[in-house]
Image 1 (cartoon, one colour):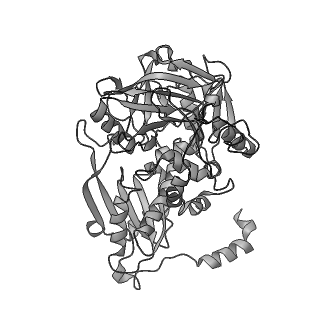
Image 2: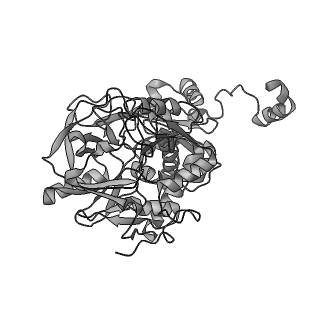
Image 3: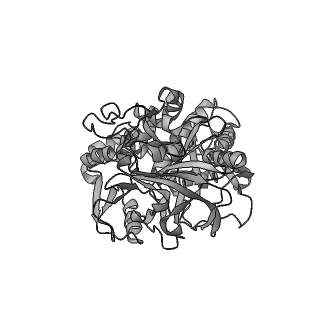
Length: 495
């Protein structure tokens, strides 16, 4: 190991005591933008989650930093809403802090592919010291309820410490590192927590390989960090690319890490608090339900692997990064919408599709379930090609349910315009294709208990029929240039 030198591993020239990807550096920047509200005295039992839920429904909404939480000392804090605005998300992705929704998606175009291509240029830097190591507790003495873990929703099966967490696993053969955001429920009165790794995701695949090879899987988990790790852990980073290196490419710096004492897996040096330990296939606890991103409590209680915690590491006055899902809009639905919209557009362009104007993965569908794409029709069958490709793209395949393709005069981000196009430019019998047995999820409220997690998806061709492009009735609205002229001339009357 090399020695830790804060001057070499800061995310900000003025924050020399903080490692790269420190949540405290991020909080300082967001506070300076006026994008953070402090909430004093909320109860961890439902009240904190309800305040956060009300905040998401306000547009624009601010991030909330909860302190003096009922039953806990001042300084043990919980953050919510970290990526729920264009300014905060732009800042987190290092794209600028003055962007609106449209500008943010435009700035993101091409970036995910660029970050993936550059990730290998930003290998992690192993350090021997970090603020995280101020307090280290052996597994026998661990009590996760010493931290203000919320009961987020009234019907949750327990307190969930893992909502904005970053779960690190490795491939037992190649050693490649993966980081994912998986929900984690506190178990055994705080001595452990279940890890709900989503089937099909890279982290779940790693865990399964370890189980098959050695009968246990090493894991480290960070519970407080720069929200860029929430983004990289919660979106589809290509297989074989470490989310820590991908994050390094986003921020333009190598991410410093400390090695787990027993697992040897990396922990971000900027983490507020983290655990390391082992999962075993036969060591399970009953988990759930939990209010999920679909807007429903997902499934019934079921056994999941439980983390046998070897060590707990935490900073003084540590901050927990909360990202509770629920009925949209929720904590990270805006982030997922923006990221997915740019990624879907980029995937279509990389596939060689012509005439793609824009894409939008609607927040009402959790950034996954309902995707609209606007195109300029070039040939017969073009709109169907785009629809079917979109439904199975790497960025959109998981849990997609509807893809709607519209003409370029329709704004795919405007649901009123999308529904108008569906209502006036489709013949349901002819223009809706259904694809069966596609990649679903156990979180799907439509999935029957015990059934394999398939779903179906509809591709809606809401474009004007190609053979009638020249003869289709004209839209009854004024020319946009003339409307701008009138707005300038009669602006006072329109206030």
